[in-house]
Amino acid sequence: MDDAFALKFLGALIAIMNPLGGLPLFLALTAGLGAQAQRGIALQVVLCIAAIGAVAAMAGTPILAFFGIGIHDLQVAGGLMVLKIAFDMLAGTPGDAPASPDGAAGGVAFYPLAFPMLMGPGAITTMIIFAGRAQHRGADWAACVVAFGAALLCVAVVLLLGARFGALLSDTARVIMTRVMGLILAAIAVQMVVDGLRALLPGLG
Image (cartoon, rainbow, N blue to C red; front, side):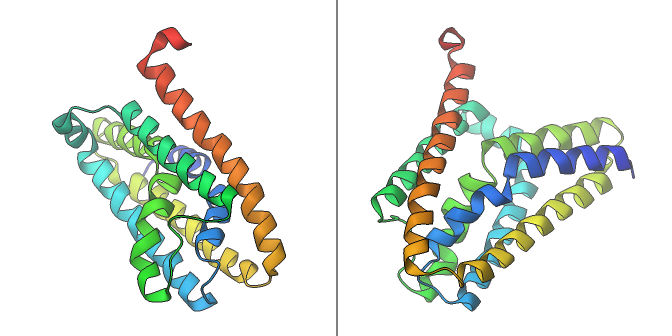
């Protein structure tokens, strides 16, 4: 296994996925749930990210080509989705917040937590690129698997510890954090859309 390749891949994934950046959204969407339900959602998020990453690595390019869309189209769409969530957080009404623990696991784990917040267009592109490099280097899949597994572990640790941290917050602190993080999330979403549009329409740059 190529250790340098694995470390480079892991560094790229952690930087793009940014688990700490996704933590406020996780806490906001699971605010009404108990610690056990939050841990369950955190594990569901990790499983969803693993599935998305595996599909992207093995068949990402052919799937996008089949539908006639590019990664930058996905980036703009994902940015708009995140922007909608950010507006809901600023208004104090997260549109995708689960109403009950039973509906929570399947409701927010995939969208919007796994996709597009953590495993968004940037992370999907990274998976496709490094999987292609591994194939050209003699199918060094072991390095890809180890790096992706380590990234999943980082996400799991951040979300699980975040659930414990969230249980210590008062209602007022939760409201303040949700509003502030909604503003930050909106800025991130705008940047996603702008970057995608610049790639699609070079004249805008």
